[in-house]
Amino acid sequence: MPSKKSRRVRDHKTEINKPIRSLARSRIAAAREAIKDDPNSEETAGVVNSAVRSLSKAAQNGVVHRNNASRRISRLMKAHARAKSE
Image 1 (cartoon, one colour):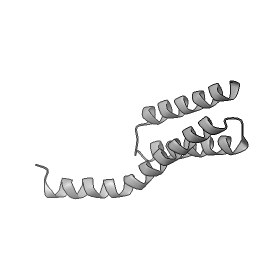
Image 2 (cartoon, one colour):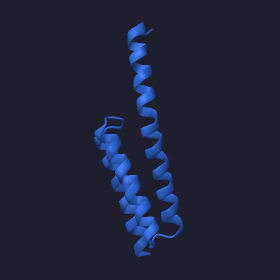
Image 3 (cartoon, rainbow, N blue to C red):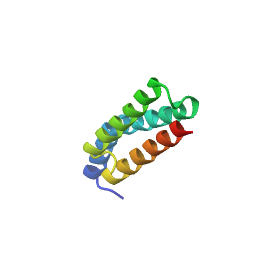
Image 4 (cartoon, one colour):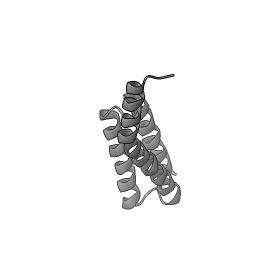
């Protein structure tokens, strides 16, 4: 059972980090949807860049591990490139 202080700290960190993580996840989902719908449009490139920015920001703030963010960015960019070439 955590101490009162560690629980307070955990709850505060969760409160701060949750919106950042949620924004990153929703932008990733939007980017994947845009890649699936129309990979060659300018809007798709913008949505993908927005997802990359939010993941980078989350990694900088320590919300997600930097390797995790890097891996997700890599997979997203590879999917976008693969869809554009088809």
